[in-house]
Image (cartoon, rainbow over all chains, first blue to last red; front, side, top):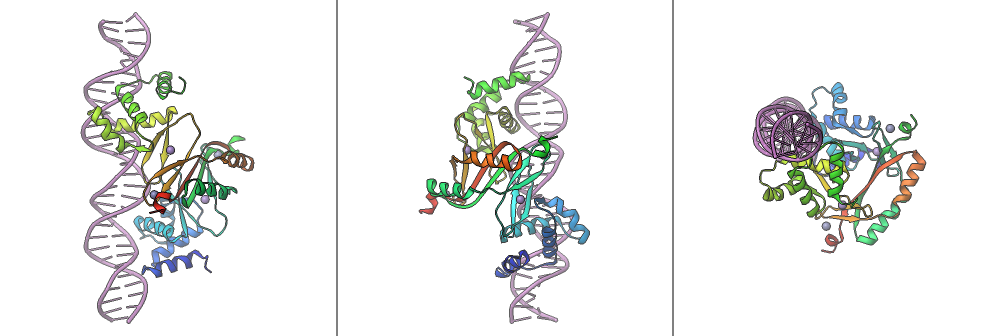
Length: 144
Length: 144
DNA sequence: TCGGTGCGTGAAAGTGAATTTCAAAGTTGT
DNA sequence: ACAACTTTGAAATTCACTTTCACGCACCGA
Ligand SMILES: [Mn+2]
Ligand SMILES: [Mn+2]
Ligand SMILES: [Zn+2]
Ligand SMILES: [Zn+2]
């Protein structure tokens, strides 16, 4: 149960005297249910069908809160939008962005541990996060 | 002479009927002379001392042009600003961002070729660019 | 060297994502 | 239920960046 996002968020809020509101709950459920790499304007219309009175500022605020609590990750792909994805217990992943069709493909990169280790060794840097972003043309687009 | 940024830009402009203006020349000189990872508002005051009439839209336009021509690279560090750096002939590099003092440290990562190769192999992706971004605490900040 | 064509410039206005403001409403511990 | 907070929603604001448009300037050909 420690890895349930709802539980993690509940604790995070409780620990600092913050509140579990209806809006936060609805936004969290939508966030868990809907796909990855979504930005506010992809959430907002969907949320409004369930809760028409919700304000867009609340959606911004909640997603940011989710990232702070550790259940979400902010992802930026250079299109000026901030996207979010659920942080899962599994292996970390990075993203391939197809410049032809816009598709985002996730990939795992073994060997990043080594890269990180060499950076620590060469620069005495304490790593908090590491992200790789590839741009190019996906196989789909290449073969058509 | 093929690797002189001024020469590359001159050609790029000539090839498409664009013009070498006083402003572009001044901005290019400043860009070459000043440090890396600068954003418009770091350039603008300096440029104005040499050319008080210059407009900020022109600075935005020129830096973007430099990136299009291949002599500059856009770099975004998630602070909402677009920064630029000269593209040099040497080895590619990536960035370490210190979350304590804000310093940007450049590093080279041997072994990226392998990572790229494995991605190509696993996903049939034609890579156009690859960027790594590390966040953490620099040695300077760790030791004080 | 002198136009003429058409790109470039600067000031100001506009854009769009994200944040802030503030009064009203909701949440929680007691 | 009460008091002490925090949160919300609508609207305003911020901020980087882009666009607009009238005028200026670069470049080419005669
Ligand atoms: Mn992802
Ligand atoms: Mn750099
Ligand atoms: Zn594609
Ligand atoms: Zn530091």
